[in-house]
Length: 508
Image (tube, rainbow, N blue to C red):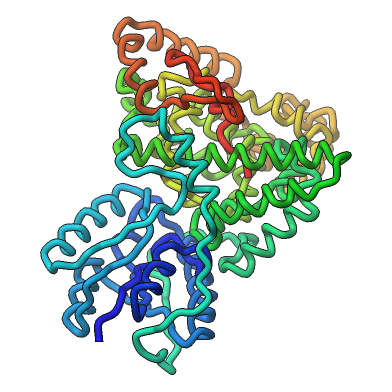
């Protein structure tokens, strides 16, 4: 008996799942997930990603078994796995979502397409986000995004499976080389995704406006849906439609709540806007978006600076506390993420690629399209965004004036008087002895002088930006990647400028 083969990737859900819904309409369905050893050997992979996926697959398998089927777990190179399945029980149709992933998944999908053509298998791919494959004109993108988000959700209520489920539960063991599984990370699975969405819409979103910038309030004020969206436990369309429905039900006097949720939807839009950049130009995972910035930081990789950043020993308390929180939870709010990249790019003068590889393993919600675009934007190599340099001392003064955040994540800071919270390296030796602390041992000494290194970095960047060659190449980047319309407006943006909203990135 022939069947429709559904291949799950970063779409670990059973509702509003276009591939499963369309396959179910055509005939018996067989569902697979493939553990690809080479995928998990990539430098952006971490143990927390694998465990989150495993938890999400367990929830997916439980639902499919409730409906009389199962999720099969296979291990191996993708086309070899497909060959084994096809030889054991031939199929004519493969269904999956489109994936805008890293360089490995891009190359793998090309191999799958070649395999399908050779075997006479038709591969149906369906949009996962508001991202348009083979987009020819950025002017058309916003309309396509809105069209995707307003289409009816594809409910999957009854599936005819190709055979009964196996009585033996599958086992999925993480590769031994994988590292980093934060003890306080979010757990995977669609039920948790739905619970997180409902808690945000019904309660936590009241603090969204004004609460998402500080690392103290952001863990509750932000939606916390980013990991569930990145791994497909819930669809973007579901989140947009549920949020719009909630806004429509708010009473007239709930203007602050309505404004916060409207801002949240706009950030969901920018989420897809950034992924579209990588879909349009996969090379930006590896190369500067504006090639006029090649050679700016690549030549002198300061491994001491990189180690200080990754081990939370930069000497700037706000930075080191953020790195510690990220290491322990797998999550950090956007403002603090931007600050980390800014510190890496300017005073530490690090290239965005090694920093990006490290951060990819730290972020549970790592989404390649957003990740590499944001790394470049914050590092100043897009050539079309205003330089955004975050001063870690000012960020601490603005978002943690009482030192609650840094004291939470850096125990040595708990012994410091408020006077020395922001620049503890200036603390007199006598006071250090009195407190039983030593700067350079218990509290890191700044690895560089913040003011002078930042000033020098900005001069380096701006001098490059003013060259005739860089100016001449800017328009091509604008044409390919810049937003064409400001969110919520119908007026076309100038081709020579980039929307101010784009400079804000996204925030969940």
